[in-house]
Amino acid sequence: MTDVAQFPPGFLWGAATSAYQIEGSPLADGAGPSNWHLFSHRDGTISDASNGDIACDHYRRFGEDIGLMRQLGLQAYRFSLSWSRIFPAGTGKINQKGLDFYRRLLNALLDAGIQPYPTLFHWDLPAALDERGGWTNSDCAHWLADYAQTVFGALGGLAENWTTLNEPWVIADAGFLDGIHAPGHRSLQETPLVAHNLLRAHALAVQAFRAESNGRIGIVVNIEPKYAASDQRGDQTAAERAHAYMNRQYLDPLFLGGYPDELAEVFGDYWPRHNEADMRLLRTPFDFLGVNYYTRSVNRADGNNLPVRASPVAQPGAEYTEMGWEVFPRGLKETLLWIKRRYGDIPLYVTENGAAFKDPPLTAQGRLHDARRVEYYRTHLNACREAIGSGVNLKGYFAWSLFDNFEWSYGYSKRFGLIHVDFDTQKRIFKDSAYFFSEAILSNGASIDSD
Ligand code: IFM
Image (tube, rainbow, N blue to C red; front, side, top):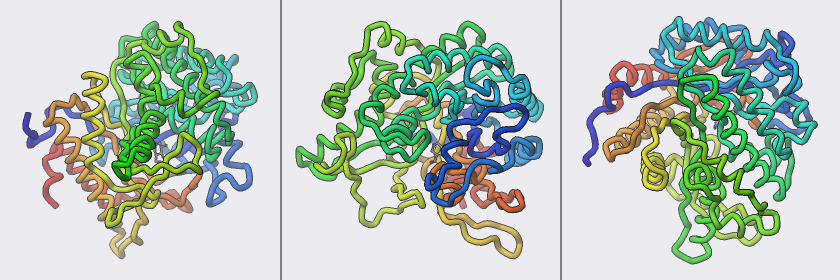
């Protein structure tokens, strides 16, 4: 097949956010604290000592924000629900006001003609559940399924497309191995248990969805292609292990029914025995896969690192974002093709793609010329178009992120937004990338070739 000149008719254009990163008002209207609320209030956890108490104040400004989405021409909006607004203690008593907030948000999106793509869980676990072991406790999968059932029962009819989890790898790796995310553990033993419990939670949530709704449901994973720094055996093994750990650990069980063999080598004695019933559960069919893509890594064997780590090698002449991530659009096309080859033709969405760059100051006319971000979007959208031309069943693309927001352990120091947010005044301004993206939506991608 040859590359297509256009995105296909009906290709979906959206932007994404998540609850803790934009909402603010974390304890409003009877909500319970999340583990991220507690974690970000702990000394030394967030590089600029900030937290999500106010963030983009979206909890109170969502009406105005939907107006901005309309101005951009967004066809879809991906966001997440905060579990502890709905179940302040994680399980048990429902907080009706929490459900009502999301009902208002969903209805306002529908009134604006924007398709909602809600995610059940984007990292902010009710703090009360962390006290019960959180994701290390196998019951956590059932707690999520109960929450899911309540959400689908109350709100399922207001969105056709849902996702269960966002980026389980980050939850397990950053939260339980590196300790830089909530709950801040550093345990090689806990990491594979958490990964498995997250996948069980996903599967149980899909089953809860089927009982309540006729819509579509998927999961969102972040995939990063792994390259070896050389053709030396050690570097090749390091790249293969990194790939098994970050990418295949999450997709192999869902599609192929087993974990990659490399993981037993990686985790050694800590690699758990998984029972057959669980492995069958993980194969619960779902309707689409969300892929978050930002970068690749080039790996070299490094005996000093944890076995799951391979040392990323900087590439001379390559461009890097403020996150230290190499700009590598080809990796997006390769990722989409790899998923099709390995796992089959499930409908795909790019559910996140974007870049943090240091934004230039506003001009006297109030414009923000974020040329590097525009280029990032242009090249990555091109990669999507090429993947479609090579036969990938890509249904849509969501920019990360709609707004500058709370970038987890980096606080507000990294800006990913199409829309600039002044965190002192809450004033929002469209960056050049927003105008670029808006034109791409309007032309169904035809405009990305021209300036
Ligand atoms: O901000 C995050 C988001 O919450 C999950 N995916 C990656 C983004 C950028 O780091």
